[in-house]
Structure formats: C-alpha cells, structure tokens
Image (cartoon, helix red, strand yellow):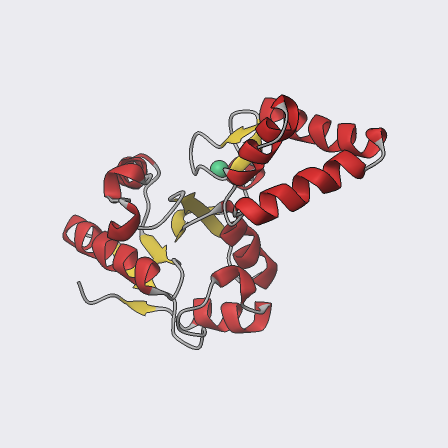
Amino acid sequence: MYAGPVQSLIDELGRLPGVGPKSAQRIAFHLLKMPTDDALRLARSITEAKERVSFCTRCFNVCEGEECGICADSRRDPTLVCVVEEPRDVVAVEKTQEFRGRYHVLQGAISPLEGIGPDQLRVKELLARLDAEGVKEVILCTNPNIEGEATAMYLARLLKPLGVRTTRIASGLPVGGDLEYADELTLGRALEGRREVEA
Ligand SMILES: [Zn+2]
C-alpha cells in the first residue's frame, strides 16, 4: 500500500501483541513525524535491550548476564519457589514485600486456544530445580483467569506426587484479572493466605 520502508515499518509494528493494522499505521506515521533524535533513541533502546537483556538461566526472569539479581541474592530462601507466568508478575509479587524465596517464570500459561501446552512453558526446568535446590514448597502464583487456573492445576498434579508442598495463592484477587493489575495489599494477602492445592 505504501512505499517500501513505510510499509515494512507498518508490517513490523503490526506483528506486536495488541497492535492491529490501524494502530500499526497510526504508530508508523507518528514515528515518521517524530524528531529524528527521538525515533533513533527508541530504535537504540530496542537494540540495546536485545543485546544486553536475556533470561536468567535458573528462573527465566529477565536479567543482564547469567543469573538474575534475585537468584544471585544469598539472603533469599532457595527452598521456597513462587511460580509465575511472566517477568512482570515477579515485579508484582516483589512489590508486596511478603515473599523472600525465589521465583520460576513459566514464560506463559497453558492455553489450548493459542496452542500453548506445557511443552512450550518452562515446566521441565521447574522440575529440574526441585532436587537440585532442595525446594520444599512451590507456590502457584499464576493469574486468577482460565489459563492461569489450568496451569496451576496441571502443575499441582505434577508436583504433588513428588512430595513437594504445593500451594496456590488465596482468592481475594479479582477473578478473570491479571496479577500485574492487583494492588500490593491484595496480592500480599493472597500470598499470605495461600492454601494446599487439591490435585
Ligand atoms: Zn533468576
């Protein structure tokens, strides 16, 4: 529809999550109108993030280097692991200041509609950590929506027979919501009131 570089910018933007064809066009023309310095700063921050940021080899949180700051912190309790869907959920739980263990980031949730099963998530890596790190309790802190609940149930069935205490954060979180939008107090209480999961 447009000349080469304009169309390829629109196409690339359109591949981002939540950006439809109309938004992609709007953002592309916004970028073209922007002062060159501002646009180049955005381009540089994408390049720099891709070059410097990777995933923690232990918990799959975002980090610079091999291991994230939380895994590298010897004051954190390695026997307690909080399982979350995305790195942004680590930030949400950290804000509660209620949790002193480590995390495991699944990098998604089970969603048959989107073709995401356990194999696409960091489940094998979680199981490998149990013995290696002497994990005593796994807290299933996935989102309180259909995908998050299905993921928690799947993991509970997998973990229970292994003799690891498996708990799920308490309700009080809005059903159908996302952890990242919960306020610190609600999420802190949900973490405190966690219960054994019936698998
Ligand atoms: Zn880590």
